[in-house]
Image (cartoon, rainbow over all chains, first blue to last red; front, side, top):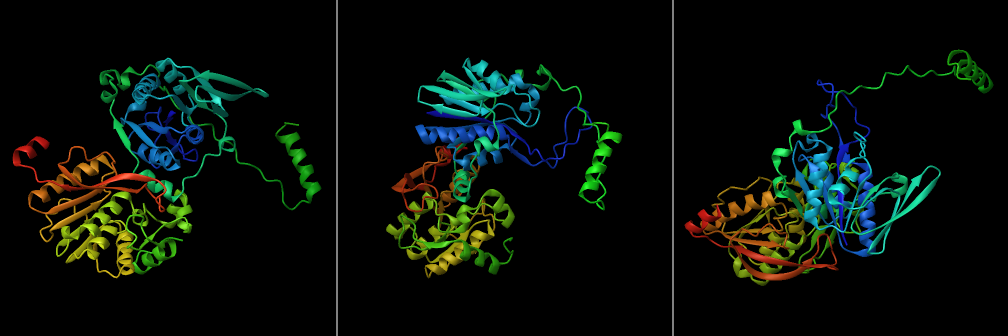
Length: 265
Length: 231
């Protein structure tokens, strides 16, 4: 089975966010960059499918040169090879254009199944999967927390309020992943995997290599733009109940504060 | 705990974190390699960052290096009595093999000081003498050398192109170049003559459970007209 995992590099969620001078982007200096965790779940799912069915796992990513580090991490986990759409500004062309480029790359890879996170932990737009599925004219199974494949059909489970839905599609299909680290428990690469990854093939493609017209891919053609960003309002400092009181006294003081000052009980 | 920055600390780290191992294709050679019997084998990226260890290529014996070393041991006439450079030496297996095959003078180059330390230890483990340098020699005319060895250096397309261009210049001046490569796909435009094919272990596969076709080449000298076409 030819499995393609689409991988986005995002800032570590513990990064300190500062709004840039333009008021609609963030300062990326000093960020630690990681694989978008939901895409990491997709890598783990792909490797499990490969263990069951054989085949190859190809990582497909996009962006500037720093993305190579995240691609190598996925290769170290066990993926076989990678393709990178090398374009420093690809995110500025708009999500629809990004999806078009990703879909064009997938077409060249002759994939049976495409896996990716349901959303990314940066702007949390959740648009990439459905858009790519549309460009491919493939079915889309969303928010998977489990996946099985019998070689011709793919079955996933996705959560809904208070329960789960089981969904099925024939190949080829695009699956987006939800869940959490506790659900997927993505594997850690150890030294032999890390070193093997250094020598695995990583092909670099330009938009022209994908048969796309670069003139269509410019920031001014983006259909959706950020107008402004605002930081959350600063919260008042927390309050510590007097530590000199005994337990009953602390409880009484806590009740008084919640009732008289916070007025929540 | 961070690896110290002096030679003694580097040697201590290598000895503590490797096992003396005989490579699959060259059992007459012993090398300090990271195997599944070593704690370092199980280190994750955060562990490596914590100890300050960067990309320990020297801890593994790659397919291209093993095949090239086997070729040298079986065809000593390529290096016997010659001044030999092992370029991008890693663990230094090609340099050890060349010394065993009778090379007159050996220099192993690797920009990683840890590799230089590993090469010295591996020379000692095989009772041969090898000089090391951590200078980046790409582009150097190598006037004091007759033969250059390069095992498994061609996994990155951009770096492969740069090194092959340099190798063609060296070959044009009469320096013999020997390469080992397990079909990593970045040699297709180079003027190469295959000399031997081996089934070498897949990457980091110590026991040779999975083998991959690995070819030893020499860089051929192109005519000026042909070189213009390639350039």
